[in-house]
Amino acid sequence: MKKDVYLYIIVFFAAMTFACSGGGNREKGRPPQPSDTLYTPEAAMDVVDQDPKRAFVIIDSAILVGNVDENLATMFKARLFSQSNEEQNLDTARQLLEGLMASEWVEDSNNREMVLDLLVSTSRLQDDYEQCIRWATEKANFCRRQGNETEALRTEAEIGVVLVELGEVEEGIAKLNSVIASLDGRRSADDLDACVIALRRKIRVMKNLGREEEIVPLAQHLIEVLNNYREHYAEYADNSYRMSTDKEEVEGYCDYYTAQAYGNLAHAYASQNKPQQARHYLSLFEGSSYGQTLYGRQAIAPTWCLVGDYGKMLAAYDEVAEQMGSDTVNLDYAKMLRGRAIAARAMGDATAATDYWQRYSCLKDTLSHQLLEGKAHKYAARYQLQEERLNTEREEAAKKRIGIIAILLGLMFIGAAVFVFFLMKQLLSIREKNAVLTKEITDKIKYEEEYLASIKKQTDRQSNAATATEQPALTDSELFEQLRRVIVEEELYLDTQFGRQQLMERLHLSKESIGAAFSKGSQYTSLASFVNEIRLIRGAKLLVEHPEMSISDVAAASGFGSNVTFSRNFKERYALTPTEFRSRN
Image (spheres, rainbow, N blue to C red):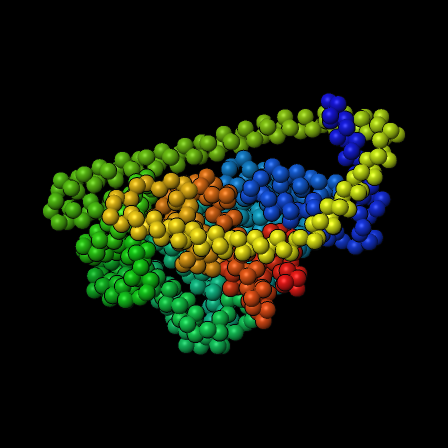
């Protein structure tokens, strides 16, 4: 208790000092700058991966020294919580954000946009579809009021998919139709990309619903849109980061999505027992660059099964199974068992077919049981969180009462000493911080590049050494290094839509193994934090090496969806804006 008394006394005088002095050497009326103090939200985001507890301490200290107001600090705390995949932290993040939405602070449009973005992403991480629709709807309305109609339509397409997931099938499809109709025919790269995404989302919805006959006109429409873009891409110039003047990039974009449309057409015709049409589009798919990849061949394998090309299906499944290793408790492996059972039965091997069917049934039961356990754990975690929050509030109330009494009693005795000590320490810290900030950033980027290069060499050596022997199951650290290599060498992070789902489908890994690889096998808390880090490293390098590039171009070339997102993340990471960093180098 005595230590708490002294602590509250020091905190009081620190706050009083900065209130009287305007926050150190800051001019009266000037907004707080990142260089004014070591205690900033940006500094908290800089250490959250290595020391989450320290990050929260920095945020609290930033409030005390007047470098950030309570509302902005709350938003940053919510962001820290949302970076964790733990259900309790996600609940805490959402409650903090919902509190901000009820405050006057979000009357500022920039603040509202930040909070809405976090609310939508947090609800999506929790699989809370009702809340996702609520906040996505508000986000769409907000974007429309701000004049960003295209982003509003993108968000509404996502709402349509979620409505179908909730059982509101016709309403969800109507929403998707409305979005497609609004975007169709617009000569803008941003609008075209949004239209392509909406069409692909509706195709996926129809496939999940088993309405294969409705996929055919959608996929054909998608091909027409892409062909028109390929032929007249110069007419789609809109100065957005989605518009490329490189013919090869346009071709790559169109070829990738056209190949997927061919695959959807082949599967739709095969499901309708129209093998001739199915084989026609299968041939087009197999001739594409995407169709020749292992990921593409795995995606088309069920269609091969439908038309009786069991050899192609089994060959693809053998490669996938070899990459999976011992990690077979997942939905992809269950689909492979089902396909093998169908093939064995068609080829007259009843014994093998029975064995595959039994293994498929057992694995499906296991996956269903895990899903139910996950839901039960989620509800229990939320209940526990409410209990812990109530206890914390009681403890904090008691501490505040004690602190107020202690401050009043000790005010006359230690005020002057605390004032001088704290002020001198703060001035020295600020001076040292400003002197080395830019050099630390540059050195850190160089270190990360060298580290990535060494990891690549090490992984190459391990791969060469393992070619003659059976590959053992990977540890979390080894799997992380393998994932790091794939993401960095193949530059998957440059895709703005890249995330965990793409890795799961590409490398046939479960979301649990991917999560463990980053949270347990690396210094990062999640795949998202790692991808954000390497995007920022690339962005910082481009800022120095290519001064002729605009900030928007650097953002697009680094994998960010917009220059706003790039600038915000860059400042959070390095406590400097991209422009400031470029000028100092």
